[in-house]
Length: 301
Length: 177
Image 1 (cartoon, one colour):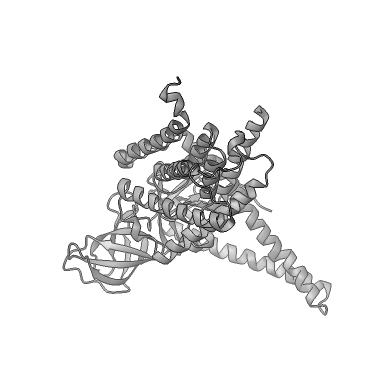
Image 2 (cartoon, rainbow over the protein chains, first blue to last red):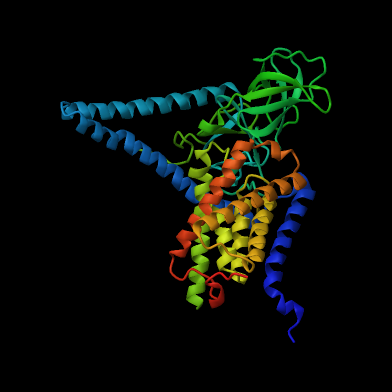
């Protein structure tokens, strides 16, 4: 007679794997912020980052190709009156306009970075999280670029988030995951510019809405008041724009005032970011003089 | 047989990685991050129905692991939710199996609701932070409907791959209990 273990082996295997997953989750949960991703998890994230990069770069090249070549050929066909010389000039013009826009965007980023007296490293966004509950993005820089967990991530419009290294948000050699300030687990100490009131900015999981909590009961804030990082806590440098108040309400449980905040960054159209690698004054793109404008370490012709 | 096993493993891992890459690049930005178009969801259901073997369980676990590793939340949440999905399908499989497209769609709609509730429950228990407030109800409903619609398409695509079924003859054709 076969043993029960043998008889139910088909049930035991999936049940065992399910239980194993639950144990991993429990351990991660009990360790709170202290648990780190397993090496296998880091490698998985690393493996995924290669096709992510390939997709990002291919998409950009294809878009350039379409905008600068295919689209123009099509236009030329539709406009038979145009001569070859005109088509060539249009194509050249289009390319120059694209380059001018790119230069303008990068110049804004560079001016912003140099004005902050921070050591920053430019990075490109190569992916987003899988879940509709997580608010994270993936950048093309990682441990090999000396990035570590807790580094602030900014852009010319303001604060983006911070680099994390947790299970599900692994920091790998060539990619890092950025926890956006809109994530429900994110907390940022902020100051209201006009009144100098301090509070904690809490993400809600929605890209357009955050909460300003732990305000002083006497705080008199108005819609339109701008928020900047306070520098308390040591993660985010002080004075970085975060967002503006869109409304005030009373916390239904504690009766304390809390503000509804619209982030200053448009996360849906974000393409490039700056990682704050140090606070001492130095070149804005330290170590990247020989790198190209998008910071991927490869020159483009 | 060994060659077929290697091919099955290779194909599943390849499809799984492709699904995850698609989800983290093209698909996630279509909705601006408001809706999770889930391709791995359909793959795990398919594995539990057509690969009711040790390999099916291990492959599902690998997919759930990769899913968790890139979820953007605590990785164990998606790993456990993925394995819960596998397990519930595994238990249901011998009891009834929808054959028509509409039946499969309704069935995957039920599983889609189950999966979403499990994710929310795990997030609430193990992370907190009131995740149930994150997604407005209309997006919640839209997400489960879209994922339920995509799952039978994944079954359809996989069933076109020659012999990409369980190796046990009796489970190639799903039984009715």
